[in-house]
Image (cartoon, rainbow, N blue to C red; front, side):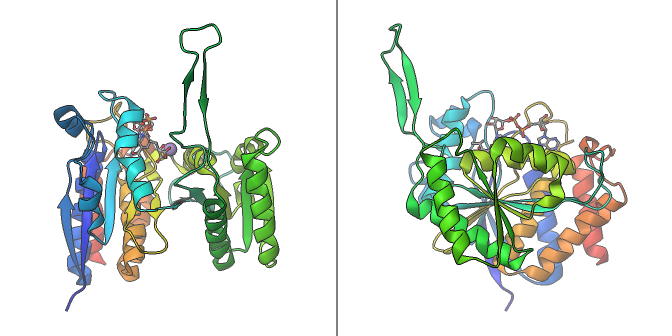
Length: 352
Ligand code: NAD
Ligand code: IPM
Ligand code: MN
């Protein structure tokens, strides 16, 4: 009997609505070829949904989304709805409710794509971003409003459990890779949470003597991942620092159009969610020119997660066959539309 997986799909907003159908077409092709079944259930949770219904998803939306093997998401956010409403009404609640505490964001050169750096050395490192707490918090508020001493405060939360588990996860990956781990910190300026982060990294580094641990303040880390990307292999970072690094990294390898990400619940108690790093790109939405590589690469990560590793590897190879032949969308200097690129990947799968 072929294995069957239920995938809950949220195209979301903007180019999410363009790249997700392309990814589904590719996945259908692949599942037929490799004899497994993917059942897609689509959810229209988005800014349009908010405008119609007054919320980003229905009351039992999380309950409905939970029932699956994985979630595939396009992007969330449009100028029609304030970002803090749309993102905190859909993306962030999913990450938190399903305890997707690891946000894994590979930064890896693809064959045939030079990237923007003068030195065209190949880049390959993993950003392990904490995904459920840290600087992203709803604790805060405005005080003394409309008085001369008005101020706003925003609390960060770094729990012992939350910090330990993300650093431990990063060590597990480092052990499987080059045994090198870099911690992103800023304990020279942020003296409570970041010194706490450093102390946990230090304790766990002693438990992992075979891994070479280094720490960089986030400012110089940004400089070094541009200047010397080959110094890095696994980088563990808080929610905000990981977010910043995961736009900076891909812009060096080729841009937001090729950056995948996985929101993982490593315990497997809840579904994990796969979504590109990029947003809804309102500036190019509706033109069929968004690069679908990031989302197709997310499908590679999703298939790996589901245990369909052969199909995952084949799909990644197809992406690189296309990029090697310079067959891609305008953001990388090519002349294909998004859907033409998707069809080309389907053709490459067929030829495998
Ligand atoms: P963005 O990633 O949407 O776009 C930044 C730039 O990158 C734009 O010039 C865009 O055209 C380009 N770009 C992005 N993806 C591309 C692709 N696949 N192919 C070609 N070019 C691509 O970031 P933004 O403009 O800061 O955000 C737009 C909206 O998306 C906002 O509402 C933001 O909050 C939201 N957002 C959502 C997510 C998410 O859902 N995970 C991530 C980032 C931003
Ligand atoms: C990302 C995005 C989100 C984040 C935003 C849209 C809340 O930038 O997934 O990188 O910061 O996590
Ligand atoms: Mn981001």
